[in-house]
Image (cartoon, rainbow over all chains, first blue to last red; front, side, top):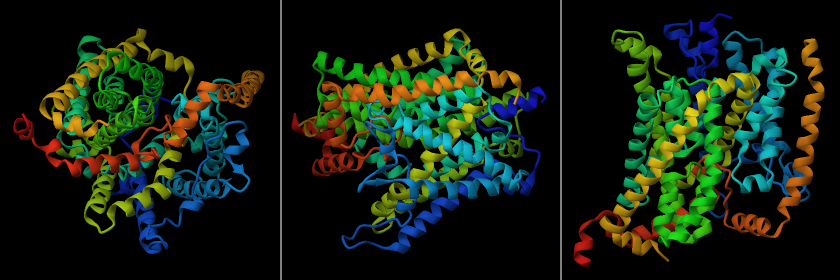
Length: 472
Length: 89
């Protein structure tokens, strides 16, 4: 394989597909991700609308019992699948497998692969994803905030770095397709109306600080640390400033980062999330900071939503409320960040590489099209949520009952695939003498300081009444 | 499969055994310890899974959000209007 081809296959979002014009609509994975994601979202929405409401007046999702994942367990891994009278996830696993192999199999055929060779490999990748969910479901690991992404990645790495990834599995390793489809589906969960949940203080803490930290961290990584890869710098900056793993995935796809860069960022992020989840509540208690301020501070700085909630709960119900709400508002920023990073990349970063300023046609050709699907899903579901009668109940039934499950599986399949394609030695070269780690630490320190200042300014000085009413 | 890869099968088997031991013996044992157990139970009762990435994955989110909305709607000026501070002062 030539260097150029190898580089393209290493990207989370490889572009430059040979097909041009209309053929891209059914030949490129970018468009396939949009079609598959869009179809699944539409199908789930129609199913919820068609099934109407139950006897209690709640909207139901007819797909929910046919879609599932291994559950949380404490003593035996078998509890993840089946507990007498309580849990039986097998129909859910079969449902997800059938939908996924059909959707991605059609895409594989459209892009020149034989369905049988794809299906054989996909079955193996899916089994590894099931295993990753089972490992992640152990309650002690969940308690420390170590989710499925880490275990999926490690399982893939274990196989590829011991016996090697079998050739028959390779046709099903479609990291980009799984990630992009998962992101289009995630778009439905980016409900813009939730931005206003905590009024002006919430917007300032989550939406003003975050872009400042992101841009400053990117600048610091490029200009001061001189990290060779702009995409690695951007993925670390987005992961640390926005919302951890989900932001890293979205940004990596938007800026065409390499798979190893995404893996490295997630590894760093998970380590610091565990540390911050334990240390921050202790620091807040020791300094006598109010629970609301502490909650807002943690919500704006700890990467993952679950870890934010766990840290907030250590302080009290008021801290938990504010921390989770600030994080939710920040989560919504993921759509805006992914869109602007994609635009910035095709115009400024890739545009610069070519020398002359790229034309509008060239910008369109380079633009990762699945971002359009992601943004369209976000806008469509935000409209449903805000304007339809029963909008919140309908979107909740669609997301909780089905699309959230698909999105989790597709990301899990993507991380297994990344692991199966990655060599430990290749991963090590991205460490660049510890520069990514330094970038994360410096960026997170700046994030901690600026968020604390903004929390104090908004809740103590500008809107002190909000602090009073939120405190219990 | 190459000869070199075949030679690495024992390494994979060893890893598989280690994973099985840790996940079926060590972690469940840690989970029975007082402080860890009580913390897991407390978080579980509140609908909090510390390992989730996105807000829609958090079971408690709907409840927490609706509580904040109730507070905000009861005191809209506290969240939208700077002038209330001057009035109060």
